[in-house]
Length: 319
Image 1 (tube, rainbow, N blue to C red):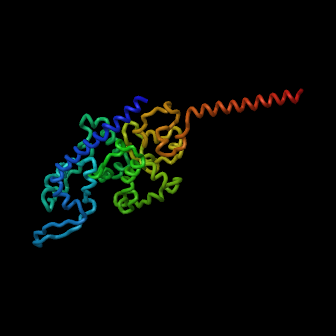
Image 2 (cartoon, rainbow, N blue to C red):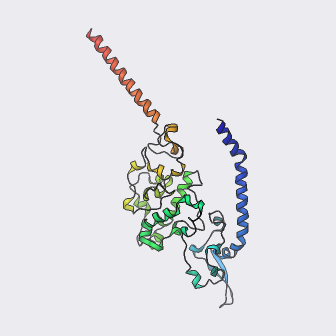
Image 3 (tube, one colour):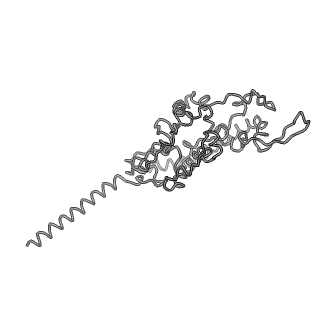
């Protein structure tokens, strides 16, 4: 009880102040980097932009390619909010029109920056990269597919270790998959195949319920207990299709979707999958070790009562 009250006191008194300080620090960083980015976002932050055409001698309005539009609001809410555009893009982009050599600059991957510091070690970036290289995406598309194909550096925000809302995590992660797999033209451009993701999942009972409550990667990646989120995407033929793999006391969701939340031991409350009880209904999650024992004891008591009753009636009739 004392520890509980102490936790409440810390949350009420210290946490708001700490969060406010973090937000103030974040805003200071944003205000510092904004002037360096405004020149880029003047064009890349909107659907249309204006530039001076030297040949015509006047300003010309043009439409920005959708792939090159960066939302200023989303950028400053994402992980890389503290970076100026030219920290990652070559200085050649300071000129307009952009020189041809700048447009063919090297495309960085996550591990070009991440994985070298002490604080990064716990995220196992090198293991993630190895898993990704074994994925169907890399094997089929190689350099045409990269980290950025799923994790847009301008909008990517970590959810798996910073959100307590499972539905938010599911929605955010699935949107990365469906960005390609629900877009017929985009998927066909990359793979040369036509795809209807909903038709391919017609076999799945309660399809919408699954899509809204379970990440695609739960069934389409090989479980990796060493990393927070598995990156070895399997061919569709190897996807999980057995209900019992999730709907059981040993649900694989404890090794995937709920991995980062599994801090309690089953023995603490008796429930096999107690950590997911408040999040969603999964068959097997509500099983309780103590209730199992009680039900068995009651069964044998009832059986014993029937046996005793039968014996008493037998001897009574015999008399």
